[in-house]
Structure formats: C-alpha cells, structure tokens
Length: 408
Image (cartoon, rainbow, N blue to C red; front, side):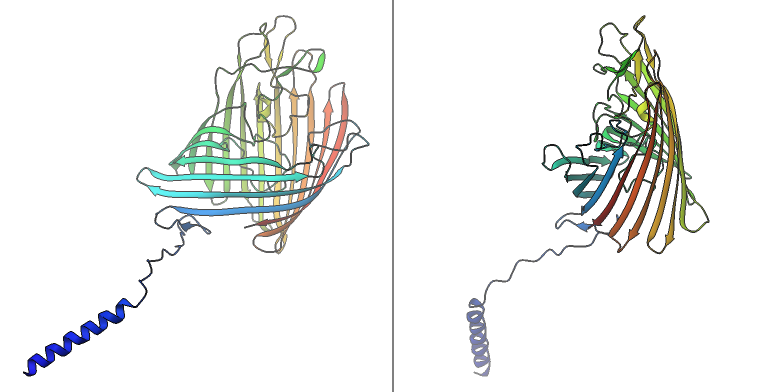
C-alpha cells in the first residue's frame, strides 16, 4: 500500500513538471562568438564556422598640396602651375578600404588580399571622384597571382613611401605571376612574369615608345608584345637590415612596320636598407640601377619627361635601346619622441641614341612625420626636382604637402 502511494506521487510530480515545461519558450540556438586569430598578427579574427582568418582595414587621409614649376615646363610631379590661370594649390581627400583573408592548408598558406581607394582633388578637370584598384591578388604558398608589388622593387622602405612622392628605382604595382622561396640563412629568391602594358599609374615600361631623331618629342609607339616581361631578385635579410639584387628583361617591338621585329631591353639594380647605431631608430638606405632599353626600371616617375626605352634609326630603321643609370640614398631617424625625419636624394641620367635628347634630373625629398597616436599621423613633406634636357631646357620645380592620415 505504501509503495503504491509513492509511485502515484512520483507520477503526479512528473506530469506537473511536463505541464509547466510546455509553457516555457524554446531554448535559443547556440551562438558563434567571434574568436581572435593571433596567428597572423593583430586585427585578425576567425570567420564564424571556419578556420579562416580575416582582417578588415581602412585608411583616410586629407591634405593640402602645393605644386610649382617653371612656366610651361612639366617636371614629372603632376604639376598644376604651368599656366598662370592654374592654381598651384589644391586639396585632396582619399579613402582606402580592403581585406586580408588567410587560411592555413595542407598545401601551405592560402591568402587573398584586396585594397582599393577613392580620391578627389579640387584640381581634377572632371570634378568627380576617381576610383582605383591598389592591390588584388591570391597567394598559394610562395606563388602570387594578380595585381601586386613586384619582387623587383628596391629594398628602400620608409624613406619616401609614406608621402606619395616618387623615388629612384622601379616601384609600381602590376599584373603578375610571382614565386618567392626562402633559401635559408636569411636568403630568399623571387622570380616574376608580368604584363608591362598594365600598371596602377600608367604603364611602367612601355609608356610612350621613343622619339625620332631630330624631333625630340615625337613618339614611336610600342607594338603588341610577343614576349612577356620577366625578372628575378635575390634578397638577404638580417637583424641589421636587408639587401636586394634584382634584374628585368623586356621585349622591345616597335609598331612601325619598317622597324625590326623586336629587340631585348634589360635592367639591373642593387639596393639596401640598414639600421645604424646612431640616434633613435635610425636607418640608411640606398639603391642603384643601370638599364639598356628598359629605362623605366631607373625611376618610378619619368613618364612626363622626354625619355623612352628605345629610338629607331632614321637611316636603317634599327632599334637602339636608351641607356641610363640612377642612384638614390636616404636617411630616416626619430628626432624626438613620436617624430621621425626622413631625407632622400637621387640622380638619374639617360642617354638616348639617334640624335634624341639626353635627360638628367636630381630629386631631393624630405618629410617630417609626427605620430599623435598609434594610428594617427601628421606628415609635412616636400620634393624639389631639377631637370636638364640637352639643348632644350634647364628647369626646376617644387611640390609640397601637409597631410593628416588615420589608419583603422
């Protein structure tokens, strides 16, 4: 009798509990919290439900610029003061956005990177913002395919790269297939095949073609290329700095039917970036290049000058590559807390055949970087250029900027 009473009481309790449970709301689904991914540095997080890491980045900069040159004489600084009706002052606003996606796989690191930007200058002729692709590439292990920096660029970091002015040595984004491999003991090697008819700021090599003898500013266009441009670099990294030896070859094929089918242009350069025990965070850098038929390997901004990779003989139509060399040196040091001073200077000299003008120019650049916070910097910068063109002109110009820049 007693056992029956206990069983009846237990059954009643269970029924009561189930009745109350039926009145409660359903349990929520599990929540996937974002996990921090510190494998690849700060700012990365795991994409929920995957083992892939993502970093979202941006940059905003605003600045006032001043660009002056001798009346009517462009100096390769996108100068705006050539006519008296043009103002040498203008304002610029630019916004960057992008992402960095990385996944560790059995075949190595797989990385997809994108960065674009939009800017507006008050001096723009069309009065509209412009949209640009900065980087867009995929890396699988040591292979990079897409729009990216070339391994051929000088090891010359931190001297003029933050102010947007040009410096000696080839430095430009391009459509590439690139392979890099570590050899051990600080050495690495890279090889690249790229399309020189495409670039972020115009075509790095085949910009204009060449000038006819006796008519210095008339151009002979490049024809369709039969051989892709290619290059290789050997880099050494150590605790005290880095060095790089790089070279490039390219097809020279004039569009004129009377010219030979093609020739080969080439360039070679060496660069370095070293820490020195002087002051605070002080570095010295240099790069030197020589080119024959690939003069755009000498400097990243000579497209507005009467310089070309080759000239065509008016006598027999043969191709003669333009020859030139350039040297650049730079110093970067922290003068006071959070304030860095940077100075760079370079000289470029190009000799052209068949009576085409020779060109030489000097660049001197300086900037002062004051970092208010870890991601906010104020930059004051300036560049002076003196251009010498055989029997044509000797002109100079100055470009300056005051910028506020925020990274996030």
